[in-house]
Length: 193
Image (cartoon, rainbow, N blue to C red; front, side, top):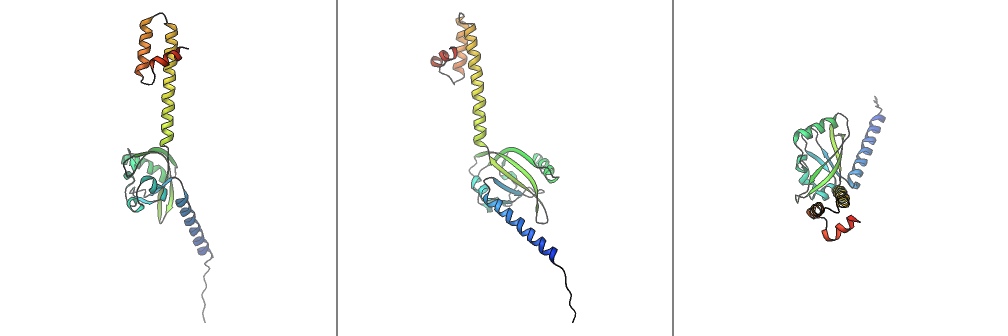
């Protein structure tokens, strides 16, 4: 009788590590409140997308899989994407702002992080995008409000300096009315106070 034995401890350990990695990946995909898309770095095609991404964009997963990433990206050309892809594949983690196009054609402002991950026999790019549409609207509102306050302050000082000059005060009132943000009859008095 001849017996041959082979130590499979390393193989078993590797198999357990792969299974553990797969479980972590699935947990991330199922529980994340970010739009996660996995793309093929060479073709730019969508390999996987989490349920939250499908919900936010309004597509069933089957409709996204295999599509080029430009299918959901607004305003990016292939050259821009190639530069990002090359940097990510070389090991950089990138963070960019852009827009995702929903199925209903509405746009979401997103901040996207990208990193290379092992995928089957090669590498893929994992993108995780969070909706920043409301944040951008708030920022724009604050910028506009700041500009309005600066204008009001300037015009208030101008009216103080030129109180006796009816012509310049009249021009200042026209400028406020032109801003379409102020009622000349109520806001001029407050700006002057």
